[in-house]
Length: 476
Image (cartoon, rainbow, N blue to C red; front, side):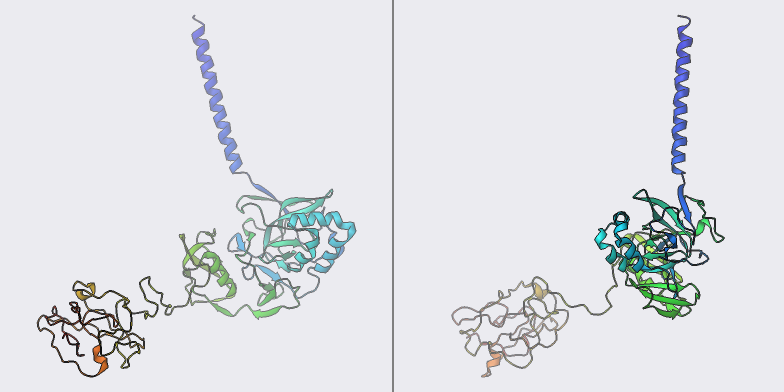
């Protein structure tokens, strides 16, 4: 009994220590996982790859010497003006020769792997290459590269030095490394925790900075042209149609000022595209881009400001609201819409029971002198003394109309005294239509044997509304 208590205490203490040790290991393991760096292999301009799809000395492409530009943000959109450079020199990327290599029966296995990486069939390689555009990188760019080893395409994360010639697709994403034909795709991962390895002859270049690397995000829509900067003269811009080799380039002066367009109400994606079309780039508060569907509420500088080509415009964004996906409609009158109670021939500003102002001409369907022979079936019930429209006059008198229905005058201002005066009927057929302050349909049948309803015409005084100046029909 005397030995059991100390032994029990010792076991319990050991268990506690083991539990605390396990907890500490789990915490340290979690921290190491979250702090783990993504390993990226550096690829220098002009340095042959160890396992390329094709020999770098075969003349497929030629890199250039360009000092890397310091970016505004590590995440760039494929349609940003000046993201890539251009050159008028031939041989930057020989697409025709790359097609021949991939179509060669001796390279059938390579063509199959190449197409598998791209996500197309081997028969579609030629058409796919025709849609790509040769450019030169102006930034150290993160991509997913693919070597060819033992009959298979092997993917690895890579950092391509500025100056490397690539083919980009119609959303501005690098798709092929020109010098060796390696297929490329968008970079996997963020740009914050990266460890760049310089090995296999790829030495650290002088302009390398860890905060100068960029990853390219696809443009919000397919592009029909790219806005490039001439690598040998930054004052010259190049407009290159997508899918061309540079033979159809047009140049412009990058020093010309551009006006900031109105971006309020657009989505982030639409605003970025409109800025790109204007020769400007989009930036966002905090660095990270908001969702493409978020609503833009303004910009800095404001709309109408003038900037030089390629400068950034910072967008103010409401991430909880959705903007217009395209250009908002211009201001102006909108076409009227019919309400459910509106008649087919009714004017847009008329109320359902309201008649237009008379035009001086009588429709063929007007009632004749004989009140017992109506020519039209009533289209609405006769008004009663409790008609809602008697409580207040109509807001305005509608414009003159040429409708076939006989008109009635709008209510005059209500008075509190005189009963209506009666005038004997005349021989003019136009006076046979009853006209009173409550609106009445012109074709309401009135028979001589039935009493005339209260409201239109009566020998009794009408409730405080004077009758209009037109003569009223006789009640005899």
